[in-house]
Length: 196
Ligand SMILES: C[S@@+](CC[C@H](N)C(=O)[O-])C[C@H]1O[C@@H](n2cnc3c(N)ncnc32)[C@H](O)[C@@H]1O
Image 1: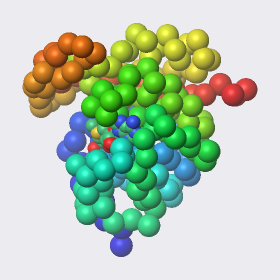
Image 2: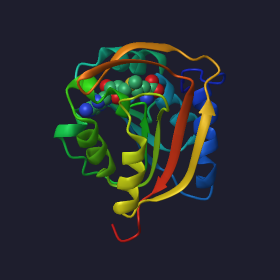
Image 3: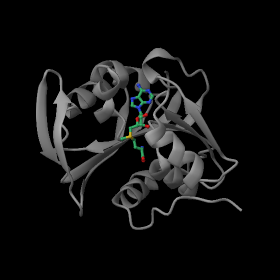
């Protein structure tokens, strides 16, 4: 029997469910959860019951790796420790989930744009980009401009109110230290252009 972490009452579950609605006629068999954790991996395994999920965490990030291994028991889950900024994923995926990954670029010494470019180079047909709207480390205008310039298509963009906002004390945004409250999340469903 497969064991998943229970995400039923989570805002992330509701939000991701909304974003993947447009994929109901798409065959999603291979997923990469690029910046994984028990919540995002469980949601993908739950809503795509025949797909395999490659769950990528930064090397040595036991905060995320250990719960993936203990809270989930599934043959469809493959936990991978790799720095997305210094490796190249050759495998082709149907869907790449980028769930709260971008806000942590600085945490591991990477620049936001480097991490974002590497993520968008993953060979996936569809992407979900999802993060905290108020996080000053996530540059949404840059994301939208880049997607437009590179020919990606935004199929859906939606803002979600967080019923339980958290206060983030002094996160590092470039050389500044800023505080913010996670009042909203924002998610994009994106498709890669056919000729890429
Ligand atoms: C806030 S956590 C994501 C939460 C997760 N999606 C969940 O549902 O629990 C950020 C994730 O991004 C990963 N991450 C950040 N930068 C990374 C990088 N350069 N390479 C690989 N993983 C990275 C971290 O290891 C962590 O798994």
